[in-house]
Image (cartoon, rainbow, N blue to C red; front, side, top):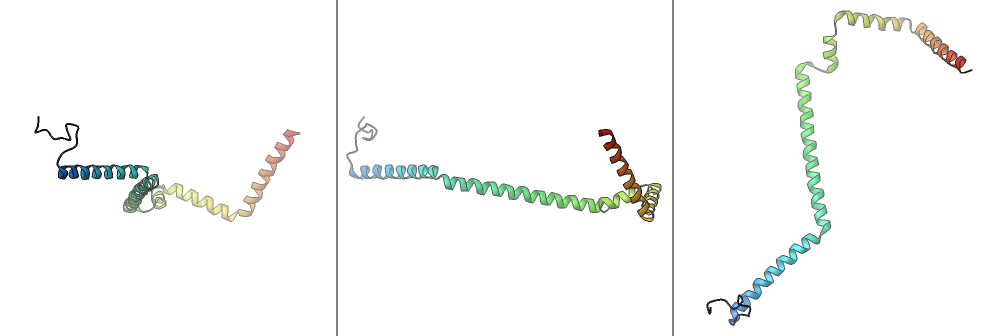
Length: 133
């Protein structure tokens, strides 16, 4: 039992060098503990760290979204142009002719069309007014 260190037996060591070593170890452990507690107590620094992490994640997601958008635009361009161009290519010729004729007629008879539309609107308003009386 005499080979057992004095510190483990519950009494201070007799050797001054060993005592100094144990004091230094205790100081080091205490300093580490204080540093850890100070880090936990520094709410502002922890919040700033979390904000920085969140900003990094947002930047990453934004960059991935930009890349994906660019990729989709490139695929659309490779597939045959804009959506309008694709619609024009896919629309049957009879439909194109009918729409063109309707637009031309609307341009040609613009004044008469405006008068007829106005008359219909006035008629609807008169009927609604008449029913409320």
